[in-house]
Length: 267
Image 1 (cartoon, rainbow, N blue to C red):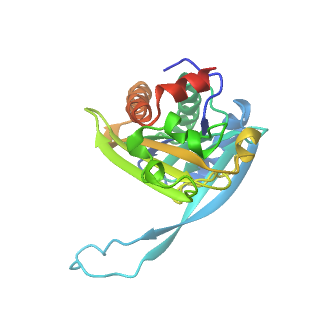
Image 2: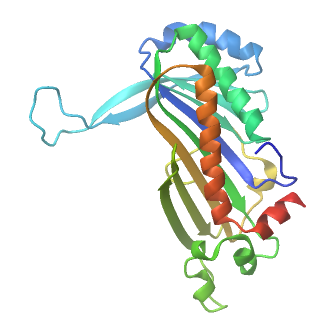
Image 3: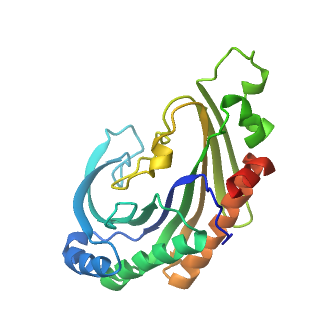
């Protein structure tokens, strides 16, 4: 888990914990910003996200209700080169990075930010913890090498189509559970520039140059693990859960890619 590949394919990672709501988040902004600045996140921005609620009012029979638009306050802290940062919202803390090193480094940095927010606002409990990786599979010799990098079940019709047919988009998804977490594993094969799944867009961080240069047939391996349930906030327990999620992602990733791919990224 802790060994870094020589040429890792990961281009974006996000760790997130959802917690009890802190409706007066702005009242703690100055204190959180000062502490984030001192640990390497001096670039500070405030923002507002729009959220939709479909819940029926209490006491009323269940019926179709128009969506209610809510403004969600957001505090954003980034390092100086905008390769990693924290998004702090009223009920969630997210850590985004495009400069992935090892899981241990990621976990330590995430817990550093969670610890700062907890010290400032005194969080009561967690509702969900998630970990998500995006990996770019780009065979050096083009599309015909994809079967060397991906398991046969991931390729869809690619291996059955005539040689003169170019795949523009292929999608595979598997949802499974380990003993301790849920894992959603998706693989997208497409032509063109490297992008992001429709439900996930980077906020405030820039993608490494070697990934921005991708333009051709490639695969995106999207692995997302989560643990749901209310737990009293305990930083050590939270870090242990994060390790559990990393193990679940490892199971999915090793089922999607081949040993050939792992050897190539380590050479």
